[in-house]
Length: 66
Figure 1 (tube, helix red, strand yellow):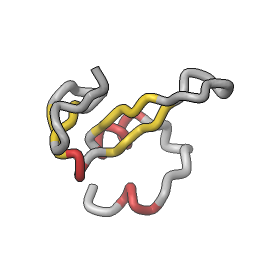
Figure 2 (cartoon, helix red, strand yellow):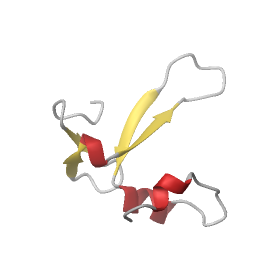
Figure 3 (cartoon, one colour):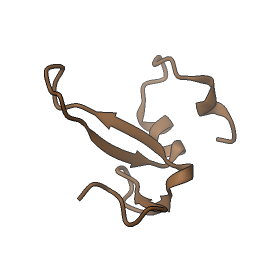
Figure 4 (cartoon, one colour):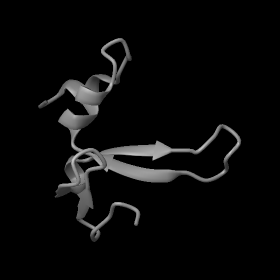
């Protein structure tokens, strides 16, 4: 399963709850640096921010409407 329920709803990879695709943080992850393929994971913005170390520098858009 790729985390998508339909074109408008996805599943948060941290809590398992559904959220609107437009409000989701989209994580494009690769199993390794040599991989040509990636997987999309989706997250609530607040869950993503809670899980990251505070020393990680993020794009300013992550801090709008937290």
